[in-house]
Image (cartoon, rainbow, N blue to C red; front, side, top):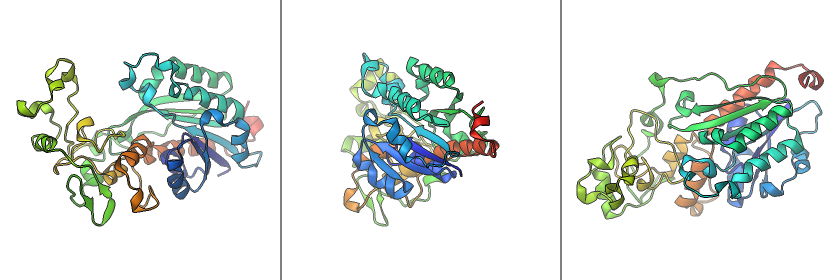
Length: 357
């Protein structure tokens, strides 16, 4: 393609790899976490710019794009979503936090680089925030056609109930996501995604796959796990197993924690704490443990040969859990990339002067 893309907040490369899978050439990713560099460079095979986004200049980004004057420049990114999550609603003065301002840094780089196409992925709650509405207004004021929608990942064959906000903006013309590929009748289930993996106990490591491992369970949590049913809640437990917070009125709303998943539907949304039985519905449907790294990676649609670490000694569940949970599912990146590719192909043969009118 006569296009090249740069990924801001690239992490270990979920979005970049998905765009590349769709045929979008990736020339660079930007992130301030050096621990992401190995996975990004090995899998995406693009430059990794190790830098705080606030220190990155538009001129530096533009030097990475291919030099062909007729090529289409694509700027992609997923700013860390924690400030915009509904779980952060109780945080006071969150608009003053550094992470909240990352969208403004994204906006600044768009202004300085003037890409032809912009895409952003984040949590649905971002659409309700003034900072996002200002970003959309900025894009429209600068000649972009903008669309955004809340995507339910199972509608595109991704085996988890993840909902994400996806924005697409183009100076070429109207742009939108491709139509849904799945419906409730043929959603990819947990069983279809990870049912083939060998059993492994809590705290154990699979002999044939060192990435297929999870954390240990305390004696009390093992008892709670055994008392849990697929898609059930801690209300199924005997009173002696319930936590003090469960018995309070405020605790009654958190019924998904300490939950088992069901084989017959997509998994719960994979978060950075998927390996912890007590932080969500992350219990295996049959085995008495939380999800393994391998299972979470599959549910995030990473391929089996994705290189997360340089050696087995580098496998740390908590650290890799953060990288896997924070990643854009690769197949969602593919959907975004395919949408962009079809959009560009729809304008194939037109000069930039015509496109920008």
